[in-house]
Image 1 (cartoon, rainbow, N blue to C red):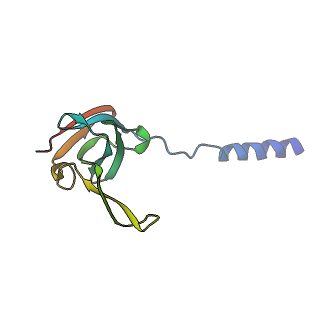
Image 2 (image 1 turned 60 degrees about the horizontal axis):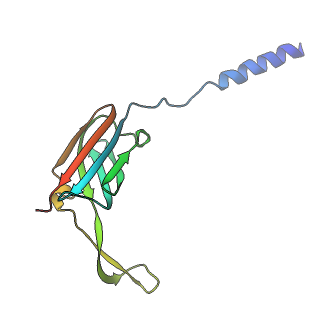
Image 3 (image 1 turned 90 degrees about the vertical axis):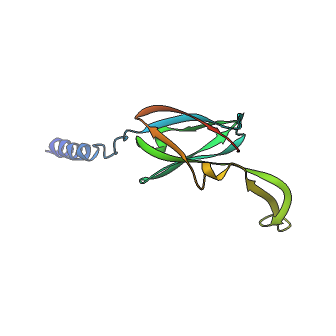
Length: 135
C-alpha cells in the first residue's frame, strides 16, 4: 500500500514538472557597422524601433550587435544612431564639485531625432552597414 502511495505521489509530482517555459520566439539577430564620413563611429548607440517597441545596441569601434535574446521580431524598423562627445567645458551637474563634462550629439539629426534610416529584418542573421554623412 505504501509503495502505491509513493508511486501515486511521484506521478503527481512529475506532472507538475512539465515545462511551463515559453518557447523561444523567432527573432532576428543583427550585427553591423556604423561610419560617419567614412570613419568608424568610436562609440554610440543604434536603436531599432517599430510599432511593437524598440531595442538598442551599443556601438564600439564602428561595430554593433543585437543578439537573439534581445527579441527583435522580423519586420520593418526605423533606425536611429546617437553619439556624444565632450566639448571641453564644464556644466552644472552631478559630480564631486557640482560640475560635469558638457557633451553634444554629433551625429546629424537625420540619423536620430529625425531619422531617415530604415531597415527590414528577417528571421535569423541580419547584417547592416550604416554609412552616415555629416553634410
